[in-house]
Image (cartoon, rainbow, N blue to C red; front, side, top):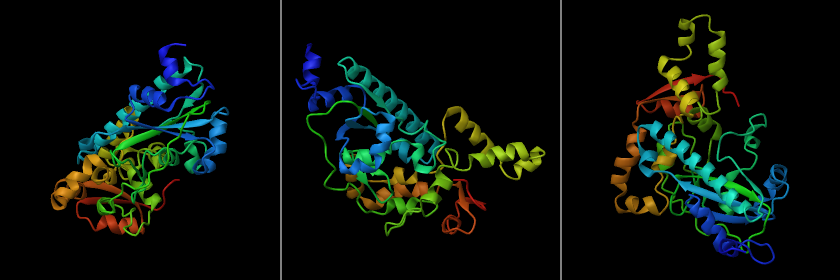
Length: 326
């Protein structure tokens, strides 16, 4: 048995906690946590986990930090670009971890941090294993007002994924005792469609209709416009030239998120909290207001509270739909 295997393997086949942590971090992720398959917090996921990898005994939660200033920039394509790059880092690190573990007889699968996913499966089941419960149980963060998982160091500015392996770990991580969410309500203030309520309410469909317009929601509307419009004049009644070019960018380079303002303004986590607490007015002026005032098209369902919220901001061009595709 070589030194690396000694650092990883216990005599009974259980994996050493510190050795496994070190292997994951050396692969390129920024934080890691381990959860046993039988954890009550994963009960709702257990059947799906075993469908994906029937030999699963432990789940490894992984996270990679985003670049804070890309997340904050009013040039929102910079945020989308960083997310796609970080997801690539996550995929490569995940594969590297499993290749290293495989040398010591450990079997497993790594999951997609976002796309691709099993689109024919309805709704949330499209992503076979939900990463948020895994991240919470692995001690990588807790859900904030924005419904994003807030990491104690990185706040909202991180992406996470998971691996399923066929070994137990000598010890497992636990959920954080304190939520990093500062209850500052800045995510609610910045949301152009009012999806985030200060009272804890969250209108997920309003968020999907706008922010994820070129990711999943309403893509079929664009296809329908392409095939049913008799000429370009009719097509342009439904999609402007900038919107068409934006669709092309999403197809060529990765989906453009229309918003993610909640991610950009969040002061949770050690990287942002000090700046926010030192001068809250300056933080609002320099970080939050540029996104609130950013000129942009906002996509909403006609007659919805989201439409009223968007129209209250003179910097937003509002585009309404009679319904959105789920």
